[in-house]
Image (cartoon, rainbow, N blue to C red; front, side, top):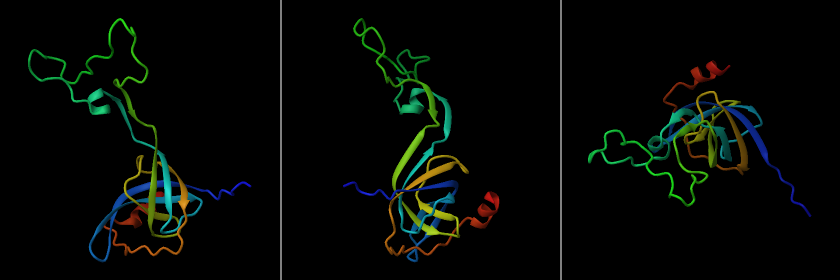
Length: 170
């Protein structure tokens, strides 16, 4: 017998990052999203998939956090260079997947176990933490765990005005 898969996909637009405060004064960083297709509920756990911000052409130091070369001992122009990219006669080529300079960002990123913290109105929700992509970028959410009468202990006190955000997207 096959299990029925009740996977729900939600399409949304990323709005802005803001903060919520619990009654104890604990700050929770959240990202506001506007749901276009599907539905979310406070307490749902979702996987978020989106395209990250494109950073353009980047060197190996920025792209892969390479340490760079020495600043002295005759190094006039090799401070941020990659260094050696292979062995020698064998293999006589550069291995596939070698970390080298190139385009950075603009790739699909998946974040798992993101909690839907709060519902602002019918289509605007707060997801806990940062999300990939720029403002107004499309976000695909997959609901992994449905909220089963989970009480979210957050009373929203939004610092930035979310009314302006709702007006901008409308």
